Image (cartoon, rainbow, N blue to C red; front, side, top):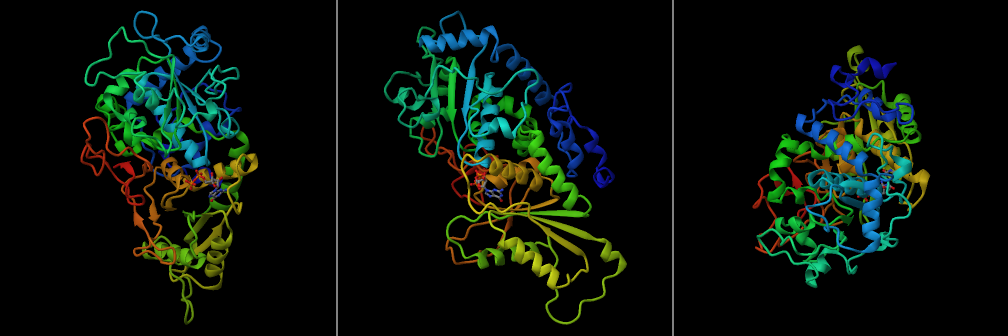
Length: 489
Ligand code: GDP
């Protein structure tokens, strides 16, 4: 009941302003239409152009997806190894297979990036079903699966790497593909049936040509693309002049790109949604404000220093009240007592949560407000390929995203996804240069809610322009938390 009392008028729109298609079976995926009830943050409206583009894309997925004649033909072309561009003009259905790997945050950023690339290039998106993507998330497209079905002819695609001969970078390097810089590729040049797009952190000089306009013109003629990335490559797509006009129309409010993509794509399955809603309703719903604190510790930092950073940040930025350490607490007035805050801590360990909880139990708050501290799980370390572990991680990302205020840890894709889903610009706790320090300031308000592209291309394209520091495109800037990273602002 409490959830319903608090929901703002805007959140009544269960289709998120037209972002989501209507008419899907609600029982098979409760989160799709219920999530609006749980979000109190001001809802960001998708542009009419994005809404119509999504409906057209859904139609493309239905027309060309697994089980259609078009799909069988495309698979046959791939199996035969023949060129994809045999007919007159480009084939109607072209495909992008997105390989999912690494932690859940990485996988979600990569999938959203692949989806935007598919939208921009009018390709059917098919995601690699390994790594529980099918168990964590509902199908996003009405009436057609987004999972790559069994029987895909490139049987070893999940082990494609920087050395794969069919990677776009290697094909350019070995002159299997020529770009004819500046011009459209000759209509007589043969395109391979597929190219592997390697955008992992070890990607090479030639792989980085993916982020160049002339190479995008070549890629357009290739029937199948298989992409591997663990990053949010979207800021890189904004560097491509060929996409500027469309991106401006799709996202007039540039910092909401991931917010819209994530709310469109990622609907937790009923099992995960149960974890989210049971926890929210039991521990968070009745508080007047929810403060999410995501603690992700990289390197070998002293836990006490991390705790010091958390408290210095949350008190310094007035996100959590001070405690009274000496003297008697002022009797809380009735007005103050009615104010309540719920703090949601997520972390692999329970220590930070226990410390915060004890601190606010053993000492009164200077403001008299009641404060409760919660942590859903403490998994101790990152488990790979464990279903229940991934379901908890997914639920916690969602729970964080239902906060009213977010404090995150820099460098963490887990936090990036939570802030993007929430539509909140977080306060970010940076990693100090020296593990034994507490950084000053302990945290900083981020430039935008967008995730950071952690491994962007340097020395971009053949004209050797640098893609960095806002010199190419003013709204693509270096990130605060990762100075060489790029983000939309
Ligand atoms: P990143 O490593 O912080 O960029 O985030 P990823 O999500 O890509 O990988 C970290 C993985 O560790 C997550 O997917 C979880 O499996 C696990 N993990 C890290 N922090 C937490 C947490 O606070 N809660 C839970 N349940 N799992 C976490």
